[in-house]
Length: 68
Image (cartoon, rainbow, N blue to C red; front, side, top):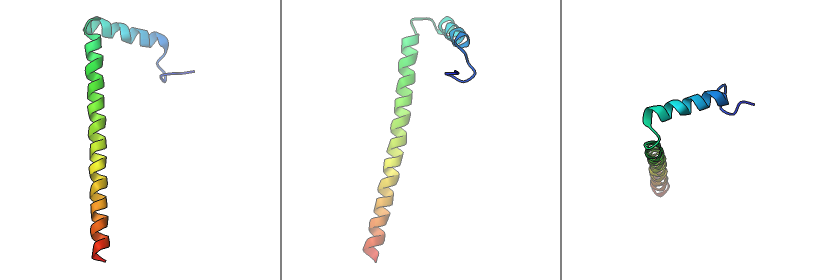
C-alpha cells in the first residue's frame, strides 16, 4: 500500500510544490541534471575503486604463486 513508506500522495504533492516555489520551474531541469551527474560520478568512482582493489589482489596472487 505504501509506495514511499509512510509518505502518502498528498505529502509528496506538498513537497513538490515547496520545491517548485523555492527553486522555480526554470531551474528544476538544471537541478535534476546536476544531481544526476553527481550520482553518475559517484558510481564511477566506486567502480574505479573496486577495479583498483581487484587488480591489486590479482597482483598479489601472481606474486604469491610465482614465489612458490
